[in-house]
Image (tube, rainbow, N blue to C red):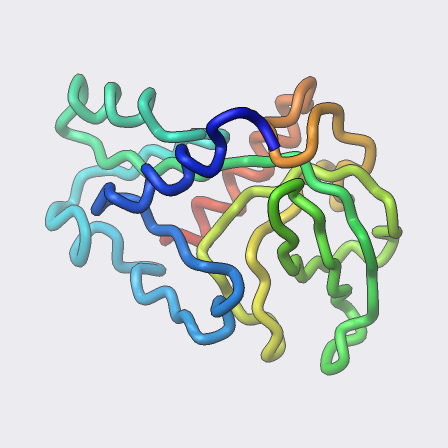
Length: 179
């Protein structure tokens, strides 16, 4: 883990506009904001702008100050390594992946039936969502119906060299998720 990372994660806890969950209890967390961002959080009808790979969100905050007629949501993206893959017990069109993000492991439910152990992947860290009763803690970056399986970069850090088409597809999926 990089220098000062634990302090940075602890620092994020003090911001009221950061939605972060302890992954050890993620199955007990519902995400009530899904589909209700404008009325329950922003209290307006302004368009939502999504920033992928936001890190601590400084850029999104700056944009929000500059463009108060828009609502900004940041979603972080990290490099992960698939540690294990199993068939979803209730849905044969889904796979369950245990993904190492460096400082923690998360579960990702995916419809890519070709994902394998040791794939190095990009993961959008999203609010927990159940798929056929299994909670997914993120979404893989993908392109043309398949996840990117040889992502460059350090575990737990922002990926390098992600194709723009993949980011566009991810943006569209995340926007649909947030609406």
